[in-house]
Amino acid sequence: MLLSPAPYHATPAGEPVAKAYRTSTSDGLRLRVAHWAAEGAPKGTVLLFPGRTEYIEKYAITAGELAAAGYATASIDWRGQGLSDRLCDNPMAGHVLSFPDYQADVAALLGAAEELSLPQPYLLLAHSMGGCIGLRALMEDLPVSAAAFTGPMWDIGIAAILKPIAHVIGTGARRIGLAHHLAPGTKNDTYVLDQPFEDNQLTCDRAMYDRLRDQARAHPELTLGGPSLLWLQTALAECRALAKRPSPTVPTVTILGTDEQIVSKSAIETRMANWPNGSLVWAQDGQHEILMEGPEKRGSAMRAILECFDRAV
Image (cartoon, rainbow, N blue to C red; front, top):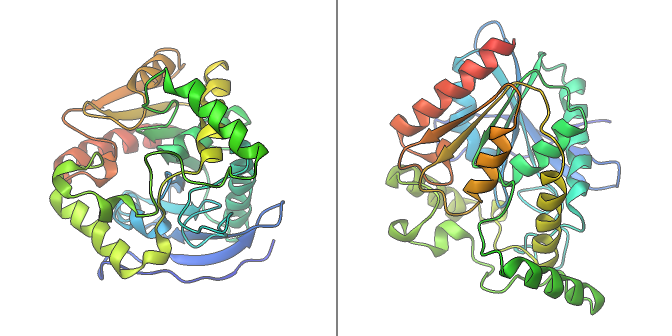
């Protein structure tokens, strides 16, 4: 695997800047990966798995906080989003052919970390969809010493009655060649530019929401709209499949906002109640993106994450 330089958009100015690269997956896609160096003697490297619609630059603040604590960070634009290859004619549709395909992206990120000689041990920090990808990766022996999740997508927060309907629609759409079309009720517009702060389900912090909106306006090529019919079908299937498997034994902390509305809180509680060496930490009044909350909520979450990591290195 040979890395080549890729763009990194330092927005807003003054945030820690990553070095970004192009790499390839085993199934022939071109992805963007990046890393931030640790400050001082490194303790290890955090593999940061972002969520659906997200992109590397979104986590510059988190990477800066990890760097100050002695950790390098490596992150990725998943297939179909950010500056990685998009997978259908509509670049704003969040699309994937099968959820386990993301494991090829995980392998590409690991390969990049090895090529760059990033410091070990590796640790996992995964958000939302990245939490679903990360859970499978842990079950398949991802080489990390500890893991942390924020609002992990271990099930999607939609009514139970709608899940079989989503499966039927997805199956029908695939048969007639429409699986890449947007799921009902979603649109091409990226969430932070479509929803006013007062109605958003991501963060209670207006300054952070404004930061995300500024990034989306400055670099719309980083953004993504709603999920495709096939993404929704295969995501729900992955959640069902993973729910049947026991939790890994890697030391883990999961941070969950009490006001979470996007992923299933009950699925997270069930998983963490049966996770050896695992703990669930509630973020009072926190929404879906705990690491995009204000300094107090984000600070509490980072302390819990760093405590978990520091015990493992």
